[in-house]
Length: 135
Length: 245
Image (cartoon, rainbow over the protein chains, first blue to last red):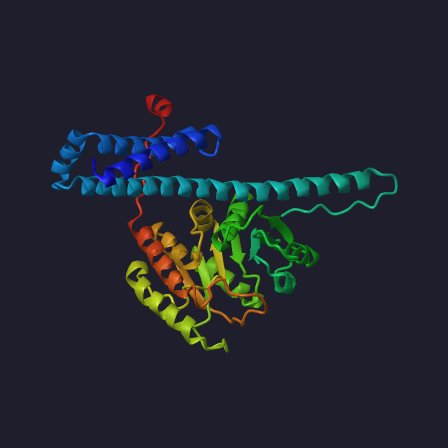
C-alpha cells in the first residue's frame, strides 16, 4: 500500500475517533458530527479499497491513487466548509434577532417597572406621583 | 415635527460625545423620543445617554452598526412610529438639519432622505480618501440606483413607515449605508439626498480605519452585488386551509 494511503487511512481513523469523542463530551452536536463522520468513513473506504480508488479515478480521469485520494479529500473539505458557513450564518442571524429582542424586552421591563413605581408613589398618601417613561 | 417621530442614536463606546448629541437633538425635537441603542459598549455610554435624558435600549452584546440601527428601526416599527431619524452618536451630524430631512421626507413623499455633506459647500473638512471613496461608490451605484448619490456613506437619514417595515426585516449588518440604498431600490421605494452640514467626529475612532478601507470596499461591493442578484420569492402561496376555504 502507498504511504499516502496509509497516512490518509490513519487520519480518517483519527477523525472518526475525534468526532465520536467530541460528541460524547457534547462539544459537537450529533447532527454536526455526521458530516465529519461521513467524510472520514468515505476517505477510509477509498484508502482501503483498490476497486473504489480505481472507480473514482476513472470518474475523475486520474490514474494516480494518491491524487485521487487528495482530490476527493479536498473536495469533501470544501463542501464541509460551505455547509458550516451556511450553519454559522444562520446561527448569526438568529443570534442577532435574539439580541435585538432581548434589548427590546429589557426596555419594556424597565418601562413597566418605572410605571409600577410611579403608580405606587401616586397611591401613597401624600405621594408625589412620578412621570411614566415610554415612547 | 411629525406626531409619531422617533430619533434613534446607535452608539458604541461613545461616552464622550453621546450626551451632547442627545441634548442637541432634544433641543431641536423636544416632542420626539430620543432612543440611544447602546451596542454593547464597555464604557459609560449608557449612563451618559440616560443622564442626557434619552431612552436607552441596551443590546446584550456588540452586534455592529447595522445590527444596532436595525434594532432601532424594528423597535420603532413595532411601536407604531411613522418616521425615524437616525443620528450618529459621534457628533458629526448637525441635529438642526433634522428638519431639512423631515421636510423633504414628508413634503415630497420620499421613503428615505439622507443628508449629504458633498451636495453643497458646507465647510466639512476635505478628506480626500473618503471623498474619493464616495465618488467611486457613487459611480458604481449609478447604473443600479438610476441616480447619482453624492454621499453614499452618510448615516444621517430619515425614513418613513414603509422603509421602516423593509429595514426592520432586512438591513445589512456591516457598513450598512450603501447596501441599504440598494435594498430600497429593490423594493421600489423612493429616496433622495439633501445638503446638510457635517462636523468632524468629536471623539472616538471611526469604524473604518485606513487599514480596513480595502476590506470595506470589497465587502460593500460584494454586498451590493448580492443585493442586486438576491433571490426573493415572487409568489406567496396561500396556506392550505385558506386555499381550501
